[in-house]
Amino acid sequence: MKWSKDERNSVLKARQKVGAGMRGIVFDLDGVLTDTAEYHYQAWKALGEKIGIPFDRAFNENLKGISRMDSLERILELGHKENDYTQAEKEILASDKNEHYKELILEITPKDLLPGIKAFIEAAKARGLRLALASASKNGPVILERLGMTDYFEAVVDPSTLEHGKPDPEIFTKGAELLGLPAEECVGIEDAQAGIAAINAAGMFSVGVGSAESMKEADLFVESTADLDLDEIMRAAAAK
Image (cartoon, rainbow, N blue to C red; front, side, top):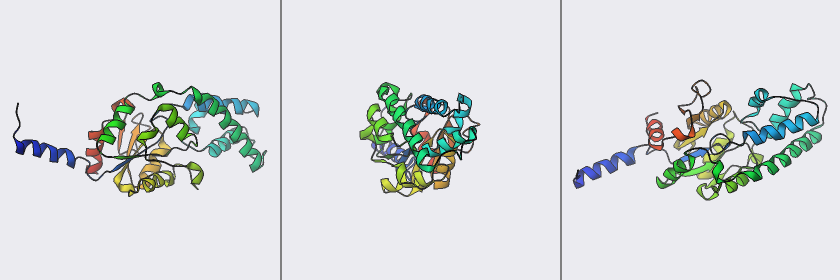
């Protein structure tokens, strides 16, 4: 079927209108680009056993999406040892965990990108969208490099510069600022409830990756990264 010039122009204009107000996407890392949760679990579990606070995978769910120091505090509270260490000693414990984690993530390769995520990011870049990473992990730049994705991102939020962790919106607000965009012109993508709360509080359109129950506060959710559809997201964001 051949289209006339007017028909082609009409289709082009319709495509450009889809999500026309959205100019950036701010991504979480774990559970969105790749899954390093297992490496975090192994490193925290080793530290927990070292200080006499064993825990299982069920408790580890409480550590997802929050900062390193907040994770340590939750582990210490679990073992009723939150008052057993000075702040300096806590920082040493958190550093020990991170050094172990950094050894583990050296195994990451581009093959560890989650399903469909590279194609989604390439589609976003082709559309002219600007991308930022907003992860609570201070190892975000290293992981992006290991995944071969560094060049796709214009900005990476340094969590050490933030005063508040998720669900506070600061990390997503900062991501938009680094892109030079208003938060309301950005989409945020997360897989944790705390992250979705942060995106919503920042005034962004929120996209959740996970179950309907866990992502019930998201503006739009998909069960898997393989289900992320740029056109669907941009239409929904524009209609909000």
